[in-house]
Image (cartoon, rainbow, N blue to C red):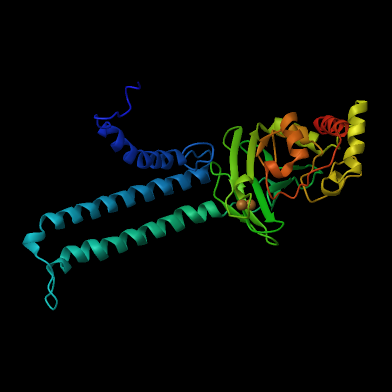
Length: 348
Ligand code: CUA
């Protein structure tokens, strides 16, 4: 017989019932606390604008905390002294509406809110908002349902979802959208900026140290909004320049018979009408540029790792991975799939 279970004639442990009531609240508090952590946290700033935003957040929290504590104290004081004050009677001026209410209910909130508004707008938002015009290098990022195209003006390099930048260098992201409104957001580097169809917005990224900074679409844009991830990889400038040079090159020619067969499959199936592979006739613009696909760590906008098994699953049944994505399932034979995978994996 299990020791912990309630049996006939013996009541269940009351502590367990109490825990059952408390557990949902405890989990909610834990989730709320953890939500501020992790790679998408604006509270782990790695650049000056992100630092200003995090200071703004902490100051707002501190002020709101003091106001909340003050309101609680007044509430408790009112409850304790309720007999002495009595209930307000109609036609009689209630004693509660005297000096303390005017001070704490009107004067102090007005001063606090005006001060916070002025400080946040003049000191934080405007500074964060205005990168020096065309500072440093420019990268064009276009949001589509549900991925990001990344272009490096002045070079043929085009990639998707994983943006490379040089560390300790001002980079201006110029962002637009292809279809609906998206929002480009790398929380540890800077604020959100809307990606709009037909209008370019800018945001400066300056990574103080090399690293990978996770980001996300921050504007609900349809079914797979949550799977519209983006990342920024900041490398030492010389490594970034080498990367950009290799990205600018056309695809490496397939080296094995199987990969050559895979390229034929790619060109003869629907792939080539949606994707570009520079150095081949494939010029599609619907999906990401695949010229150097294998250099990316993830597929489908950071949804799955870029490894052969996942790639196979994505090619065979994309809707199972990301329902609603424009990628159609390909009707491939086993040998065609093997050849296609071999080819895609050779795109370094
Ligand atoms: Cu794009 Cu949400």
